[in-house]
Image (cartoon, rainbow, N blue to C red):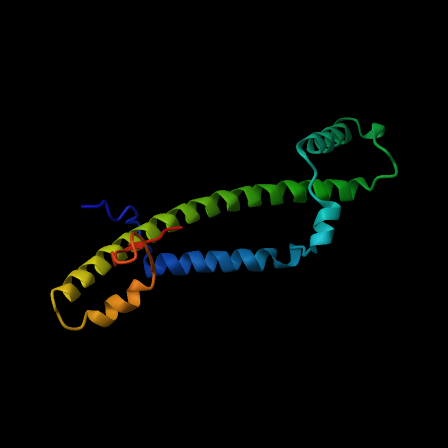
Amino acid sequence: MPFLNFETRHFSQEEIAAATDALQNLHTALTGKLASLTPEERQQYGSINEQNKLLVNKVNDYRNIDPQLSSPEVDWEEFSKDYKSRNFLESITNSLAELSRGLENAKILHDWDNYQASLIDYQYSVYRNDSGSTGFHTKVQEIKQFFGRTGSKDSGDATATTE
């Protein structure tokens, strides 16, 4: 017998509502701060690499330790705001990425459970149809379309294809 129900941590209506509300609150809190870049703008501005982040961090350190060594041509108040915002956004995106990975992994397990249960139900339906039970023929015919044909032309075996 196959191992079923890898994921048994299900959501209550209250948990679904709380998560939905929290997500909506996050959207509301961040809406005015989000940027929309075209693919060309994303290419143009890109993302600074780790080496350049070290440069920005070192310049920020010097600004904080020895401000008299800083260029008067830089708007240091704006630099500081950008620096704080950038650190905050990186923290949020890292947290969201971790959350997203966990959610995606849980979804994969729920998908697997549903798929395995569906295979068992289909096998049961084929068995009942082959034994002459009424009502199963249409179900088997409709579900059969989701299976690829394998084997020789006359074998008639249907097996599931997975992604």
